[in-house]
Amino acid sequence: MNFNPLADNPLRSRGDVCKAVLATFAPLRGSVSPGGARVRLASSAARFDDAAAELEGFARPLWGLAPFAAGGGHFDGWDRIRAGLANGSDPDHPEFWGWSREKDQRLVEMAAIGFALALVPELVWDPLPARARTNLADWLAVINEVETVDNNWRFFRVIVNLGLKRVGAQWRPDKVQDACERLDRFYLGDGWYHDGERRQLDYYIAFAFHFYGLIYARLAAADDPARAALYRERAMLFAGDFRHWFGPDGAAIPFGRSQTYRFAQGAFWGALAFADLEAVPWGEAKGLYLRHLRWWSRRPIADRDGVLTIGYGYANLLMSEEYNSPQSPYWAMKTFLPLALPATHPFWQADEAPSEPPPRSVQPHPGMILLRDATHAVMLASGQSARHTRQGAAKYAKFAYSSRFGFSVESDWGGVDRGCYDSMLAVAYADDPDQYRVREAVETAAIEGDWLYARWRPWSDVVVETWLIAVELPWLLRVHRLRTPRAVLTKEGGFAIDRTGDADDRAFLSLAGAPEARACVAAGSVGIRDLAGGREAALARPLPNTNLMVPRTIMPMLLGRHQAGEHLLATAVFATDQAAIADELWDRPPALPAGPWSS
Image (cartoon, rainbow, N blue to C red; front, side):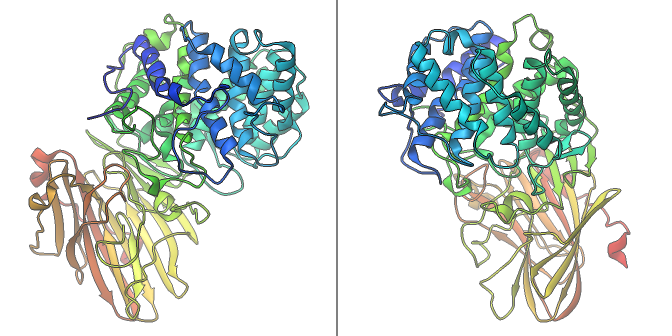
């Protein structure tokens, strides 16, 4: 049974999305504290204190409820929310959220409250008693006095001040200006930012930088027309690249951190509409937006009460970040931003249209080549490192990511079935076969034509040069030049595929000609071929709950043993969910082209 609150919703119209925002919020009602200021949904913890985590549960739904109300929607819980605002910001109340310190999680949640003040002050500010208004303004104003994290968090100060200004409270235009200027330093060009000093280019560019920038572009256009125009221009550029991150069925390619925010991945398309920016035709933007919501409506992403769980395609703490509390997934409510627009807006009036970008997109800023076919989208990735992120190698440094097959995170080391090496090359010393290392950081990276290059070290004395070669899906090509001073073992994986339920007896291993392995299940077919010879094929059954999409998978692999010296490994990877024609596609592998790997 699917307890997803979106499960029975066709998600074809504005009215359907209005029902979706209410249905998404409804399971939280029973977990609201007596004073209305806190929401606690489960017993797991994040790195910050419980008061901040419970503030998340209170504040994050406002990203959806405030636009819904601004667009004329009726929500019967505003009395409870106003009580929460009054009590949570009252230092003398038992449910006080606490004063924010430097780089405090409370600063994140302030943005949702500031946004609500800016959008619907008549619901969240005007009815408050004078003392409650003073308390709330004082509590929010702390964001102008303490340091935020030096990345997308700078936008929180901007949004809070927009809210304070709208309600006539004291605000700091100088702090807004400073924050915007600092954010400009993260801009790379062509619509792309990096999130702080670390070179991370992931969904935060869409659902943070551009999302907040487009809110500013609408709400501050009269007072700051130049910056509003700048944010609109950057979002216009970004949209052309970002549409490649979504498959034809609406699924986004999971990549990077914070995947538990789920349909926040598609919030950018609604934010374009909110800012009245036709970066792609309105019908295409609406299609990207609604197909994405529909894809999520079919996933088991909620518990039996309908509460969104930590996880991606299902409940899964293994892939979570240290900052994910049980309330964190409700950042997904950002996706409901276009409900602020009337039904007459062109975004809602447009007929839903497919998004049909070219089948290949080279994106130098994030270090990617994006590919797509009739059913899914694939990202070849090289050049981002994230050792500081939990499961960072899996989230940023795999060779490929798929909107259909997702990726897997590590749960244990050693053994063919224990390491989750889908779309990875893992290397171990032959005399220590239980310690495998994968690409985590990149020393050098480049894009040229149809291939990505990276030089990396699984071990300090082992050097690997990897070329990821874009060909026509369902095939991908890889070449590795491995240099090692002593004998090593390697494991190289293709994509992992769903075997939930019964797939063991339907998966098969094929060893004809060059070593190859292919798993065929109801979900499609994935495979791998050794193009250079010398490695053995195998099918691995990774430990459960390691893949983001499904809890049990099977994965084709190549296993090698290499003596000291230089070795060239060439690999063809196969993945399709078109089971009816999988055999035909498997019989048409691409030839390895000539390139720098040939020398």
